[in-house]
Length: 121
Length: 154
Image 1: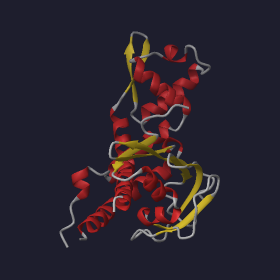
Image 2: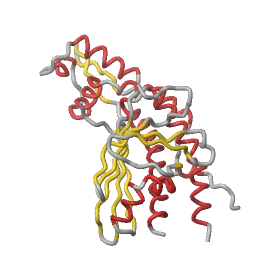
Image 3: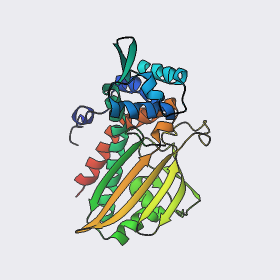
Image 4: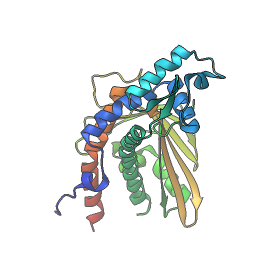
């Protein structure tokens, strides 16, 4: 039998440390309001809490709470602009989370190749 | 609710086989089980019904493939819901959020395009996501060995 290829190195499979660090990101995203905040920040650059609550039914207190959850997961950070805080999206942790899904995606790739072998016989 | 980039996985492949052939490999539960790695002899995929079978994958034989078939649209679409990484037989996963798996078939030049999409990951409990990732990353080496052995057989 040929030597086992080092698949984890070749395909960049998820390392344990990456799994651990991705967990708070998924937890932070597991809420509809926080997903909306991330979507708005992705599209809108640096925004104040006033801007984030305009046109919504969400209170300033609720947005502040959600922003702090997202900040703990490293997904947003704030900058001071005069007396205001502006909140910005931080893309790096989400890239980590995506890499976690890539692992499951590879399992589907494998299943599809098995299907290919089955129907092309 | 919107779909985030962390909620959904999609993969596709072109198979050099007619749509009717691919559909049979997908929708005939027994045939499906042969390539997917589940013992589904005598089982069927029926919309609204649950299908269960023992996983036949080396190293994963203690697991049960357990899906709720949602849609069966001949030669076009098959979908189910399941609990990814339901690896502990003593845990009742039925109350937990499930993910949805959708297979879609399309005619393309010289064959059939199969797309599989799994969605709903954002709603999974955090601990389950960890299980899913651990299991998948650990299982990948074994799967690659399987496929290499399979294709190396004359």
